[in-house]
Image 1 (tube, rainbow, N blue to C red):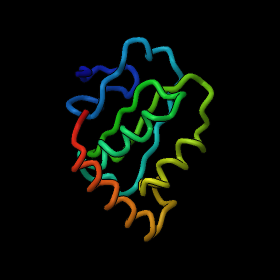
Image 2: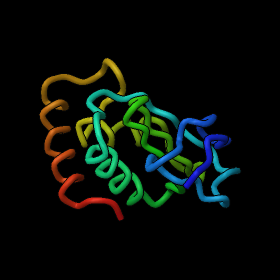
Image 3: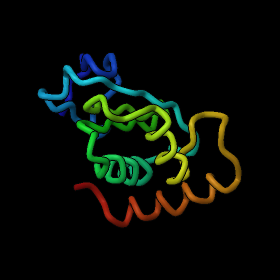
Image 4: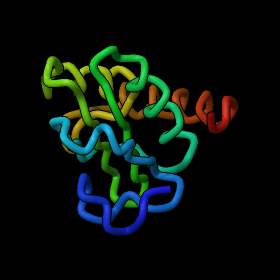
Length: 117
């Protein structure tokens, strides 16, 4: 697990929120503050989906802070990741509506059912 001194997220990615691969430390990163992120099921769905993107290195999800941080190879834009998060039901804070909230319940249930990797 990542220690509380993680250089990527300034110390907030401890516990089961994610791990920082040492080879990803020099990669660019994007951080999102999202709505509807409440638990480990939500976090698991987000991690699994974002990890499928070819440009992604590490995905760190912090339900307590409602934040998602990804490292990437530089070929990914903020908008591309935000669109995936929106599609899962976790829009950037203040940008979603009822449809995203409903989607987040489904994503959460799937994440709880699939469990951790």
